[in-house]
Length: 178
Image 1: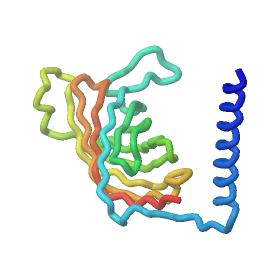
Image 2: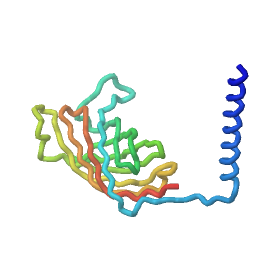
Image 3: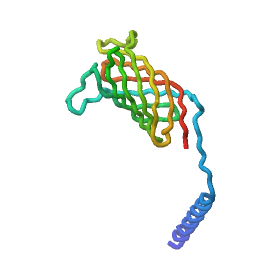
């Protein structure tokens, strides 16, 4: 029993010294280092989205004139994995225009997009409700450490059932990091 108590006291002493050393190292004047992704750093994201049921409805309406899609997004290291939503409406031209937002551990990034229906259907499509879209997106800002995000690029989305979408976004990103 005496050995266990001595061992516990020795471990506690080591922990106290380690904590005191760490505190002493951080109490002096310190400069916060700010890093920034290189202007125009290439970034690519892939989102798996599903059409969301409107709050005043009880079912999903594929090919609706407006709506919201939501799901998971995976981006390059700079952003990582997160959640993505896209709210869209069909313009008179037939294009889908809207806003999007992505939530990551470091903050959120948001912006606008325009998608034009593609004449090329997905190659694996055997469904009447399959569709492809190509277009552009722009980052309008962000929150937290992603607050000054700036980006623009291309956006390609495809669906085989007008409910589940895969969207690939690629562009150049400037993202100040603190």
